[in-house]
Length: 261
Image (tube, rainbow, N blue to C red; front, side):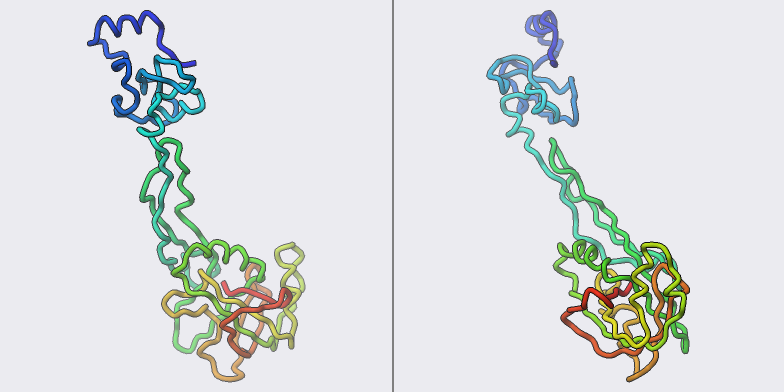
């Protein structure tokens, strides 16, 4: 338990200049302090939760040690952390390769007196983007649609983000490398088959905030134009497809469902 020895309390009464304790009924309001953690110097006097009178504290640990001053809840209310809205997604960290993009937010209100701690202030997501060169063609980068659930959960609280869309493609060619991956994270590539129609979803953060499109979705392609794609995580798994149609309301099947990076 936290207390001052009896003799010191006596000296405090007889010799006010010692300032060991404030006046008998001071409490946290008169102390004028609300301290972090466990702080033996954050001390006052007054009524305690057990209805006894004497030394009491105004620090963050006092609710657990049951020695708060009577006015601690009013003088030192809990204040939870508050953060700003997310910034826009940055560009990819490096061009012309699979890498990541980032968005950040900052602390508006620091937590006090045991309030809820701050959430993460930075979030990263995979991406790929290329520097445009006249006449150059670059592949769309795709991954399994299973990752889309996590993306939707992260974006659910951002009301200002435009909802995504889906694009159907018919695969016209595929390399043998899509069948050679043995690790668990490449098993989804076995669902890529020549002649099949696949559904690829465009979600944040792959959905560019300026163009409102995902890179490689074929939105500017001609009818029956062959477009290139590549599987994320296996550079040997790639091929071509033709854009069939865009679906503003996504209803991709669980199989043959993929995601733009």
